[in-house]
Image (cartoon, rainbow, N blue to C red; front, side, top):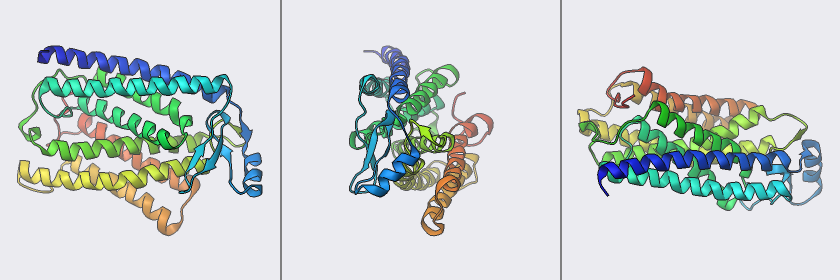
Length: 317
């Protein structure tokens, strides 16, 4: 196939991923809406009475802790459960379409396919869904499905509508093997941070009493685990970016807006982890800190490229 045909195929795969993610969102939402639910008070009583605690899970599923303390939901029953299983299949097919879009785009341009804002957003959506599905392999976290899927669908939709860039070469500064090192680490970390951000938002909006979402403690645990895993990757991405800057521009640090906001994001997540470990922050306060950090991340990834000019102004938007 020619480069033009591969680029067109990549665009079709992106559209397919949007539709599949949206359908998966509907299925996960049906499971969440029509599953059984129990009040938090009942869960708290059960946790005090049984050896292995339970909590409200996806669609009212019971949740039992694994050996490492991460809560995993047991399967719910009924029509909601069937919708959830179909949604999970659709999510995997959408993930495959998202991956195919990235692969064919890379083949079309003969480089790593994240040299502009469009390609970067497509890759971050893929990373966020990968984080969700990867977690689902070990733990039943389908309760996050509606929110991760709609985030990915909207992200890809925005990429097509507002950030689309025709396949082509990149600026000389990006024509380096460092794009495979620095940007890949940033994309993976951003996907995990997005999963944590979704869990954090759900923590804040979750009402007291009857709820079809897991307990706030379980949502906080999901967010914390994702951040613990992704923070070293973001640290590595910042360091690799400095090494790349030295190779491209002859200095490790130049207070470019992208560099500054990458560091601000690092400090914000470091503050969250430090507060959790040393100050023992829990609950709403810790969640607000991590969402502030997530807002810094989003501004760094999108806002800086759109609203602030600098050496990283190669988003083509």
